Length: 351
Image (cartoon, rainbow, N blue to C red; front, side, top):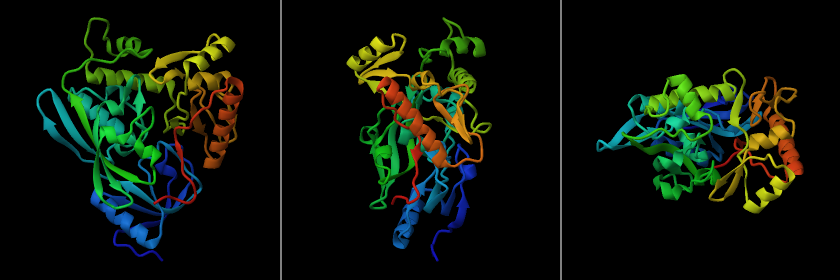
């Protein structure tokens, strides 16, 4: 029997707490309202020899049918203005805040920096783990510091942006999953800014949805509504068709590899980035015939080849098997390796 100072709920069902709606039962579940509570719960689990998992809104995980150990939820939903000099402001945002709610909250106040990240599912605590990004914007551009608990020591630490190791859909927290629990994020936003409309489709949707055409200045809220409209057209709603958003990262290849691919397929799209050339994972998957594919309870969305979906009645292993088959087909046809975005949690956890 597990005896704890903090109440833990036994045999906890997680199906409603992951956006893929995969059935999963955790041995235990506990909520922590702040970093100090996280430290205490980690210490209790360590004394009991129990593994600990951290799950926010479950929008970037693939769950097994059973998670052995304790699932920790973070419920700090505070938003505090730390600094405001009239041009820039610095916010501390608790890990439990819903990400899209934060984006709308800041846009309604006329603050710039998060607007193109609208409608990304999940909580604030998950945002730096993946360094979320969309439509020409990434979290790393506004993140100045991350508050986290060091799992090894139980200490609350503050890591400056440079120490977070942000990369494309990557960070130190993702690479070192066993080391940290993110409890808050500090963001720097601008009170004066301009809209990022260079991503394909943004300017056209801005004009159609908000009536903002060339020569007019969009507001942060204009951009939030524009990006929201784009995402709703292109991506299935997880509340209607369970999914975890983009399932694979867009692969980056060298210039030489891209030229070789162009020799095979002259129509292959690519965008030059500092690391080489970024390919469209959706384009590669679609050319392999997977868009709209269904295999029993799981499949690929009709509207976007990058989104794997759960039609109901399936389990995580089925979805991962489909993902493996998709990646194999892309590698065999194009010689390009796809990297999975959602983290597949295993039956035995991590401390």
